[in-house]
Length: 604
Image (cartoon, rainbow, N blue to C red; front, side):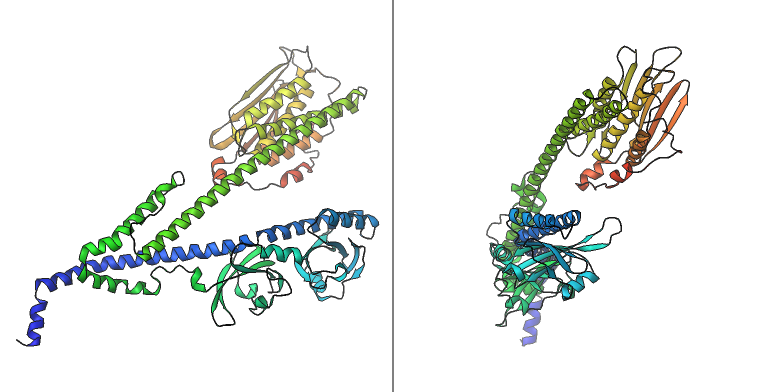
C-alpha cells in the first residue's frame, strides 16, 4: 500500500476522527479561556498600575500636607501683615513669632506688589522686582512653589511657598506672602519612605523642588527632562518607563500632588517587568494552539484539571465575596498552574487592599463624626456662656429699650444653643429630627416670652420630620424668630383667651409647611408693641431664602398667620453620596435687607 493510501486509511480511523472532533470541540473552550484570561490580565495590570500610583502618592503624603499647611500659613500671615501694616514692627513680630512657634519653617516674609520685601521674620529688606520669577508671578498671580538653593539671608537651601494677597472687595493685588521650608526637612521626609523608590517633587515645568536623594544630587531626575505639561498628566497620574544609563528600562510614576502646580515623580528600583502582571503574557495568543495539542494527549480530563476547575473556583470565589464575610471570597486553588496561581494571588491582594481601604474609611468616618459632635457640644457650651453673660448684663441695666434688646439677643443665642445641642445629641449627624428640635426651641421661647397670669393658650402640632442639617438649622431659627414676634404682638380677642399655635406639616413629595398663628386684639404686652427695628423681618426673609421656600402673611378673623413652605432635601440620595456641599450663601442671606415692600414690616 502506498503512503497516500496509508494516510487516507489513518484519517478514516476512529482514533483520528475522535482526536479531530475532540480538538474541534475543545477549541471554543480554549478561545473562551483566552478571552477570560486576557480580561483578567488587563484588570490586574490596571489595578497594579493604580497601586503603584497610589503608593507613589502615599510616599509623598507628608510633603503634600506640609506644603498645603505652608500655603495656609502664608495666606494667614499675608492677611495679618496687611491688617497690622506691612512696614510696621508689629508685622515683623508676627513673622518672627510664627517662625519661633512653627518648627518646620525657617523664614516668612511679605513683599508688596512692587516687589519690595517690607516685612520678614529676620528683619531683612529685599528688592525682588528685577527677578524673573517675580515678574512671572506679577503677570499671573497664583500660588506657587520655588526653591532657593543659596538661601539668601537664611544661609540654607529652602523650598518657598508663595501665595498672592488681594484686597477683599476690589481684588487688587497687594503683594505676596511667602513661607520657606528647609530642604534638610523635605528631602529627609522624602527619603524616609519604605518603598524601593526614589522620589522628587517637581513643578509644572519639570524643575526639581525637592528630592529623596538630596537637592544637591538631582542629576538622576534632571537628565530625564520630565515635563508634566508635555506628558499630559491626568488627575490620577501616569506610569511610563525611562531608560537608565546602562540601557535598561526603569518604571516611573508621575502623580499630581497639589493641583497642577506640584507633582511627585517616583523612579522605582528594579526593571519594569518587576511591576508588571505577567499572566500568560505574550503567550496568550498561543493558548488555543496549546489547548489543541493537549487535547490529543490528555483530552477532557487534563483540560478539566488544568484549566476549567481553577476557573470555576475563581468564579465561585468572586461571586462569594462580600464585605460582611470576606473569608469565602479568597481564592485558594489546589495545585494550580503558575498562571492561575498568579491570577489568584493578584485577586487576593486586591481583596486585601479593598478590605484595608474600607476599614480605614470606616475609622475615618467615625473619627470625623466624633470630632463634629465635640465641636457642636463646645459651641453649645460657649453659646450658653454668652447667654449667661447677657443675663448678668441685663440685671445691671434698668428697664427700657436696652434691656429689651439684650433679652432679644439672649433669646436668639439660646435658640442657637438648642440647635447645636440637637446636632450633637442625635443618633446620626446626617439628619436632624426637626419636630424635636422645634419643640425644644419653641418651649424656651414660650417660657421666656409669654408673661405669666395672662391666660395665654399655646399649642404645638409638629409632624415627625427628618431634615438635612442645612435646612433644620434655618428652620429652627425661623420658627424662633416668628414665634418671638408673635408673642410680641399677641393680642386678646373680644371673645376667648389669647392663643398662639405652631404647626409643622410634613406633606407628600417632601413638601414642608410651617404655620405660626396668633390672635389679635388688645395687646397683652403694651410695652413691646410698635418698637420693632425691622431686624426680625430681615432675618425671617433670610431664613426662608436659605430654606429655598416662600412665605406669606394672612390677617383674617382676628388672627395673624405666618406660613412658609419649602421642599426638604432628599436624604437618601445625599447619604449615598456621602458628603454635603458647603453652603456659603447663609451669611450672605443674613446681610440682605428688606425694605418697605416686606410683608413682615411689624417684626422687630
